[in-house]
Image (cartoon, rainbow, N blue to C red):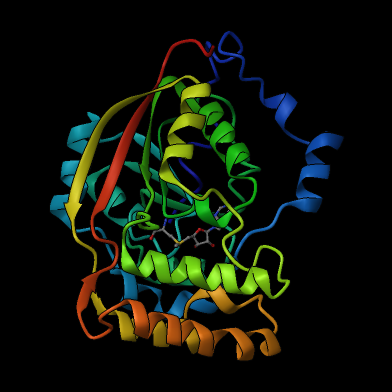
Length: 300
Ligand SMILES: C[S@@+](CC[C@H](N)C(=O)[O-])C[C@H]1O[C@@H](n2cnc3c(N)ncnc32)[C@H](O)[C@@H]1O
């Protein structure tokens, strides 16, 4: 792996006109205040099992379809925010893109480094809300399955807008399911039970729906380009999903006190037994889909 390929490339021509002044975003008191209160889920605990559960890499065909739909040139410079173990960053680098992967969890970074063989992939340990890049550095930003995890998700999107070129791309994968999916309903029932037991923000402190992401991107001057459907996620019975939740294999219980879990989880299990056929395999998520946005030349 090399130095971050995009770090000093291309000054941010046109970004000031678009209302994107980097100096306003870094190292001021307001931002320090944001970070005192900002929360995110630390994924290091999941690093060694993440690939087995979610798939190690986006398939070559899927990566090609995604880049094709976005019109991303072969050697495009791409920033992957919250890159995790490199599920997306690695295939994009192998395709020819100059990729910088930003990831705060060291365990995930270690897994990524073990997988990455391309010298077109650089890794930066950091937060999406504090990107150390100049305006207009990248042709595209990838954000996959991240924004529901970070309380400063709006700020991450604003940072993404600043580091892409004036007409750059944002490739977004929501990845957290839709309200009509049974596993999402089970997750939200767990949230309700924990909150009723007095736990403030028991898990996933970030955005709750893909629609909110899309609306926020609209306010930042992004326009919708297209959607790319990748098919259903991995199959699992709801019973196995519930077992993982109860056994702490999912991040939903990590910040919930043991005594609250002991009270709520048996009630969650009963609620699930009454409402669902737990032995039916379901795809999680039902549909893996990406949304491609392009920055308009000026922000509203
Ligand atoms: C569910 S994983 C997704 C990883 C990868 N994008 C993928 O699609 O496989 C979420 C990742 O986002 C990272 N993350 C959480 N909060 C973040 C933040 N504020 N800035 C950057 N990354 C963050 C986590 O550490 C984790 O590796």
